[in-house]
Length: 218
Image 1 (cartoon, rainbow, N blue to C red):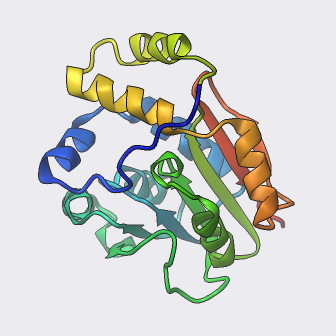
Image 2 (cartoon, one colour):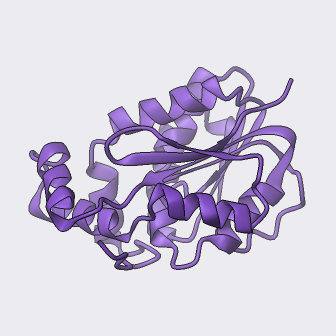
């Protein structure tokens, strides 16, 4: 199945509200568990934070952590700010409107850099992956998780029926389009090698998720 691009930014108020309302609990908890397994700590950078669910989870789970979340969608950040202000960790989280492909932040600035399911939104992920790695301090933890593209439309539709059976028609279509826009594990390995992430490994996490990851060094 060939890759079919979807819009890079979900920036209408309706799209942001729809995404915020979707139940991401299971995947987000799995993502957080992997971060902790990789030794994530200290200052975190969340690239493509969306509605800001994960920064609150990070602050709850990792003592003394701080999170800077960036996103290119103003409407997503409205939801992120709302969740931040409603949490007990508001002083440990901050958000900025930034492009993942050109962050303009200093090199080696964060102990942990992560991103959850934005890779498939980016036509050419090389600048994004280079920026993510540039932001990471030596010995830090990196986790880039995304969907991976099934090998057929039939498998794509099977995954939609399996994991979005109770979702709205629009949410099901968003999931279907995201699967079609995703990379394969082999494609991600090749791209990571091209941009110099030779110490990173690509791991297939589930029937629909994969991770590009680097464990923290003691």
